[in-house]
Length: 496
Ligand code: ADP
Ligand code: MG
Image (tube, rainbow, N blue to C red):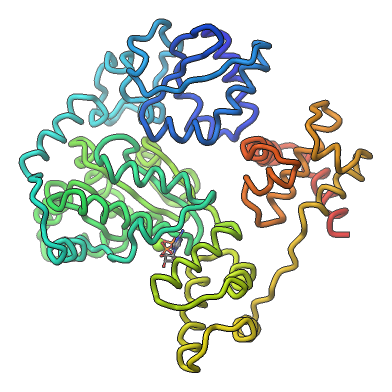
């Protein structure tokens, strides 16, 4: 059965992006088979929930493709099924794998490596150190609740904005993964996903999520020492300490007086050598003692310019999570949530109009709502559709013409000489399944619909099917020039 699982893994590798494969599938361990049921093990609850919600169908499909049998799959957290009956084959444990599956019995037997070794397991991931971390915290963690006022004070002292909490963050497909990782860390800091590296475009909620981690940790344990600052602030404090020849207290603040370090906009340390040097030692000291580090950045570690190799590799040790621009439904939900928090009455048609017009940046969306809210309260009225249109015109924001999914499906069908019903249907012959995948890819690219919504519009398919098609083509199109030309031709037809 291990062989079947390996074959299924190879099949899955072709169906999801390389990044997703590394993050999710490589660390699933086959445990045992019971009749037609495969039992698979993963590192923790977060992982289990994520796989179950997003990839279970895909796994079942791959197992069927390689074995010819429709098997059911049960996912369990490590230890749930007892001792492994078949040991995992692969022994090559890279730091990235270690981060998501740190408790396999195999890995406990790994010798400790020093920080210098390129493939080395970092000591903080060993079970002993993680236990120490929590033991060390216990004495400082009395169950006595503190007053709301004291909690607020600690939140501010940690450099956190109380508004940036989980409660006010709207979760959608574009940020769901990163949100889940953040919640998991907030519930159990110093454990898995260390460091967490969040990246994504401007105004998409990176700072909000980063701070939500800190706020939630303080709510759960006000004695945790949470430190939140931008990498620029880190650099400025460093410069001041150097000037005042007071490096000891600088180092003590970060290395000894901090349980959770939240660093916003880490990209700014690119090219700043002494800041990188100091941050490197801070990172090591914290990481060694099982303290949690969360960073945000506008680019992934791989793409960050001017970053030292040793930092680049450390940033990739834990989990790398991206945030994408929110889809239309999420943008509407964000507007409604903001309106509720700020006490602005917002009609649905206004929300739809604004969310349709402003698509790339949540900050801008929020700013527009606040402006219109102020304008409306000045005029003692609600925000009307006319007011919103007028505002968008003033700001030179046009309502984009949305392509419809049906139009895309028809254009692709026409190109391949099949029918729209074929594309929406269930037949899996290549002559139909390939055009279907192109249409799914184009629909994702040119409309704002979420994956579940697209699934519905493609004849009631599961969202994982759409996701798999989109991810596969996103990967292929990077290198396949024939595919690039085909997609360009299809786009021309869609826009004709
Ligand atoms: P970034 O750090 O990625 O540039 P921010 O975290 O500063 O973006 O977010 C910009 C603004 O948009 C903030 O006011 C934040 O509260 C809001 N925001 C972004 N995403 C969401 C979301 N999913 N739900 C609620 N508010 C959001
Ligand atoms: Mg930010």
